[in-house]
Length: 119
Image 1 (cartoon, rainbow, N blue to C red):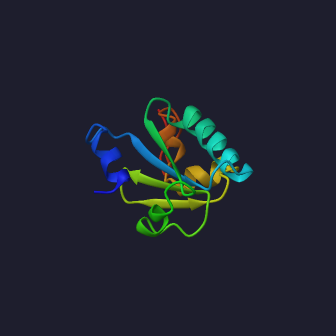
Image 2 (spheres, rainbow, N blue to C red; image 1 turned 45 degrees about the horizontal axis):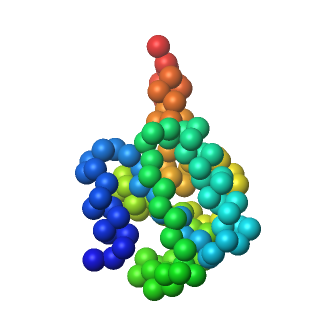
């Protein structure tokens, strides 16, 4: 069982929360920026509905191959499925929200939905 699988096993099942893994390479500026950007995006769009796991490939290089990580920083959305990946420092909230497959209506329950009106 991988470390990531053990970590997931400790989270509540089927909570609807987002389980996000951020793969970084030590304290590099891009890695630090990616974590800061991700934390800001989650605080605004997924408050109380997310778990961020930071995986340092300098400490655990075997996880890069095991999890098919080709570049860092890489954000992986494990839950809810399907798995989605975003590469980069996550500086564009719109790109991150799109990559996580989050639309405005999921992050803001009062936002108008596509193809319909909001009452």
